[in-house]
Image (cartoon, rainbow, N blue to C red; front, top):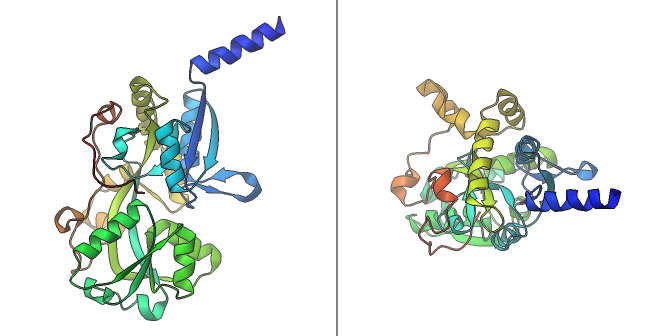
Amino acid sequence: MLRSLILSSLMFCASSGFAMTIVGFDGEPFYFKNGSEGIAGACHEIMQKLCDKEKLHCKFKIASLPQVLEMMKTGKADATCPLSETQDRTEYIGFSNKVFKTRFAFFGLPDVATKVIQLKDLSGLSVGVNTPSRVSESLEEIRQNSPVKFEIIKESSNISTLMRAEKISTVLAYINHEIAMRWIEKSHSPLVEAPLKGEILSYNIGFSKKTLSNEKIARYVTSIQEITDDKETQDSVAKLGLTLWSEATSLKTEADVKSATPAPTASIVPASTQGLTPSVTPSPLATAVPGAKEKSEKEDSE
């Protein structure tokens, strides 16, 4: 009798999508391995709330970005966070609304980084970047629109990008601002941010179209929006030094907006006019429908 009950429960869980595998790349404070305590970060908190709300049994994993994308494409993972939305990814991932407002930035030792104010100041420098990723794609676009030549050094991870800049193996690192600031704080690194600003974009939560139906993705997207609209979630994310997209766009005054989003220097043009590719955000239901987006010629990127 007991055995039959257990088998029935397992069959119900399997048929109802009770188990969900969530994977992300290691990038504190978004999502990271917190020693013996397991995985932590803003993405983990939001996804755990989704699991509780939808009564899902969730497993959290960490992998490199290329592995994350492959797992989402093949159905070895059901969800991922954080991930910026690109047209090629919407072929196999249904994206939530924008969750985090973030940006990329240049970092280096003070004697060099503080002098990088305009694009022309990159002339002759080497810039390390985690490749392949959305940030490496952004840097390539900056170089294409730059009036000067600079070298791009491909790195295998965010941390190696920062460490090599600290050891002057490369002169600068181009990386997510929040990830870099957290690493600099924890490791007491002498690296500083350059005045020249990088691209502003969003990070989202993605759901695999290989394992989840359009209906489930749409429901989870709605739940994510409710979770990020909750004051408790907003306070928790703020304590990690992150900004929710909804919070950033709800600021009332121009002064608030300027203080929350540093304006680019005169030398760098906003992504929409400079040629940098901004994050695309179609409606949640549209991203949940296979084939809703035309295939992009760009490779997978962070």
